[in-house]
Length: 77
Image (cartoon, rainbow, N blue to C red):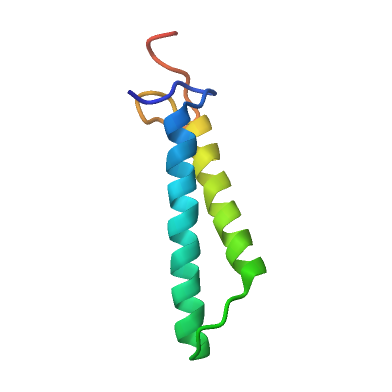
């Protein structure tokens, strides 16, 4: 079951964390390939991970249990 409009569940935070980690890994791989060496820009990686996690959590906060963005739950209306 999905969270209702303007609420978050523990699964939302867990999925946001997984998304942040995956985004950080992809950022490391991309920057390494682009630079031609295995060099880490921790600030850029951290900002990308944090941004992606916050975006995911905000999306879930403003989505109702039916998956509709910026609409109240039809069950509660």
